[in-house]
Image (tube, rainbow, N blue to C red):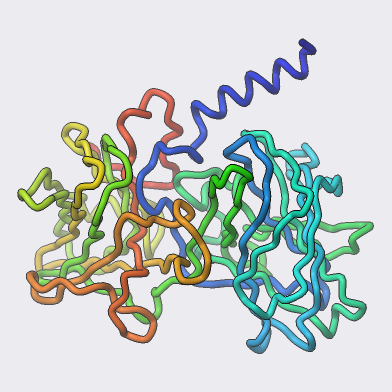
Length: 396
């Protein structure tokens, strides 16, 4: 065996044991604030979604989110797009190499949520970086264009935008040069054009049916942020656990608004409380920024969530303090599939401490499409787990 082949083989083994892409977390695993777009055309020739393969198999399709009809998002006919699967260039910047492994087209971006299928799919190797590159092939891309739309995170440049995945492994880039002479930028930088982090809304579909990606396509931050204070409580209601999960901690993204009382986290089922504990308000200060932060409560001992059973992860606080939280909307009705989103439950809210309702969507209608931004860490993976990043843990 050649040394290079051996090193690749060892890397893939190591990756499978340590990557945060695997089943080491149970829950939503993504955080975001709002939607954001990148116009593909009118000065930006290409958009790129970079990802690290989680599975060794052919990549048969990708499902993404275009917006064409709104002012500032699209113009003219909307354009048409070549969609290429490319290798990584191997440089520290990890740009697309221009080496095309498979190609297809998107000629109807005005459908908004589109699936691009590769007629001659290429086989990916787990652990390797790849790029899905969208090129506006219209004869006049300055007049006919659409936008790739995706989730947006308000931090301009944290070390890790998502707690369970490295920035390198899931990112959005754009080319403001030509296709032949690209000038790539990572659109996760603290620059005037960016002002935040951009997270691809993209689902990868492998030949054996395996699905991976981010299937969240909207946030309800502006319309449906709810307070946690006194009788006002929030929870993620897990209706049926898909496979037994031994969990050691739970991490939640929310905001501390006032007071010094801790946030109480309760894991319960139909038989009652399994464990209840608190996250100090100071943990939100320790997280290092105002606004929404990831914080973690570690259980006294791991708990097994039994396959098929239902549970609730409840968030409460005394009336003398206030926290607030908002859900992300999963794309279940827009052809995204689990596990690109969390299919085992949904967010709920009570204003009186007893009557629980599904979380109101952007039109104030109760909806089961919302999920709190949360995840459990799976205890069985502790010895090989990449710890959550950019979070504040509770020290017992």
